[in-house]
Amino acid sequence: MNTAIGTTIWALGGLAGAVFALPFRKVKGWHYESYWLIYALFGLIIFPLALAIATVPDLFGVIARAPAKTLAMCALFGALWGLGGLSWGLMIRYLGVGLGLAIGCGLCSATGTLIPPIVKGEAASLVADLPAKTTLLGVFVSLLGIIFVGLAGKAKEDELPEEAKKAAVAEFDFKKGLVVALVAGIASAGMNFGLQGGEWTLADGAKTSLADLATAAGAKPIWAGMPVLIVVLAGGFIVQLAWSLRQNAKNKTFADYATLARPSSAGVIFWSGLAGVIWACQFVCQKAGESFAGSIAYISFAIVMGSSVLFSSLIGILLGEWKGTGPKTRAFLALGLAILAASIGIAVVAKTL
Image (spheres, helix red, strand yellow):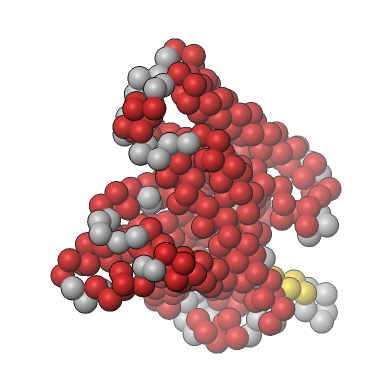
């Protein structure tokens, strides 16, 4: 175990999660559902699959040796994330990068950390010892931070005129954004359950996993989590694909794809694909960092999401999303960010107890 290296890798994943949407600002000429599909294709299929093939010998053989039930459950939780992920883009459209990701990632962090052990029937493990109790405290502290960030968003809506709000976030709508953020944050927790899955019990009672099979096949420990990652993401992609095509049919926007071969669409493909690659890096970092964390790897999701909250909020400030707000709003925001930073600190401390 090397908690410093693991935490650093997770923090880099959080940074990726905070900035992934920025390339979308460069996308011109295509409708939302069309360029979202390009993003999903690169982020959920092309990039993670290419990385897994490059780092895990006999990748498809490793996956084939896992029980069908295990693979299906991983894909199913990936699909649950897919439903939440559809709301992610809308959340940013209504709330902006800073506020949207702060609320969404914060909720995702809390639910993604608590749900897996509860669903597995291991809820007692959350309070089994001092490290577990400290970790749980960190989760509740993060929820408190989310509340203050949310209060900052509500105060922003109340005090700024429509022109000022739209100048920073063109479609700013706190009420719609909050509903979407709740859906995105809670449903997206399925990602962590899927990533912490991929294990099963052998006939002799011993447990094994896709990561164990990958290591046995010759993969380095840092890349052993790639097989379960691509299974989970495949489940998410199916949902994203179905939604995008449905929206294309509803809005009569299939014509976007007819321009794929034109030079004018090169920018759309590049920027949408780049957003997908950056997005995928947060979960590549999550699984890579877990190789340094041992038995407490489940806390990785909380640190990745918590880091995303901090980085996204700082980016939102740099982008001017809080420009013109008063002392009360900024105090709420500063307090929320400080509490969220403290929650990450608590999580790190918990790993050393």
